[in-house]
Length: 172
Image 1 (cartoon, rainbow, N blue to C red):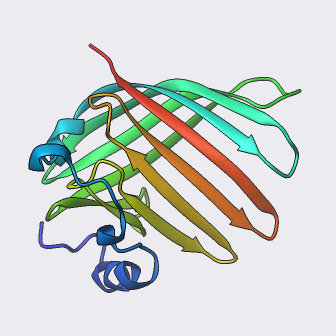
Image 2: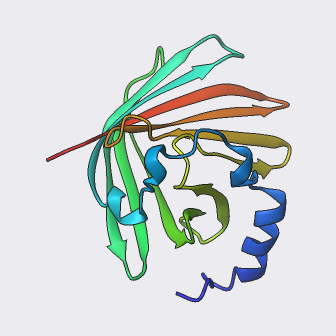
Image 3: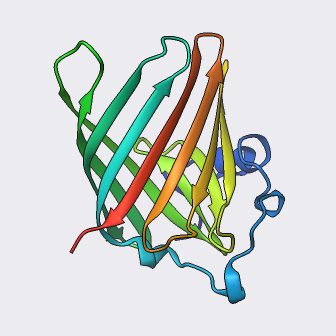
């Protein structure tokens, strides 16, 4: 793929400057120079997620599955799980992204093609961010226990203050 996704090349270029932390700012280079590749994520993953809302003091939970499959030169990410908020009946939640390999890293796009963030696979704990005014989203990936891995999001804004911890364990 030539870097164009639904005509968003200029948006993605802007996102690199405005929305993503420089991957070189992250620490913990991969041990022994070993670098994960995007294809290493292809497959089915058990997904366990905890959502800690600091404003309400509540903790929500999602248990489900994430599937990553080739889609041309990219990787489609689809998750589905049972989401439980305190005091409410459980519901089914879904989310889809597109992972696009980019050098030693991956650009993540929303389902509609908008750029989300980029992270490096050359690091065991890469970080990235996404600005969605007036809110700011920060993520720290953790590949130190590969093939199990995780992503922790911290979200802050005028009406948001929560932390999302997602753990992935390979199935089958």
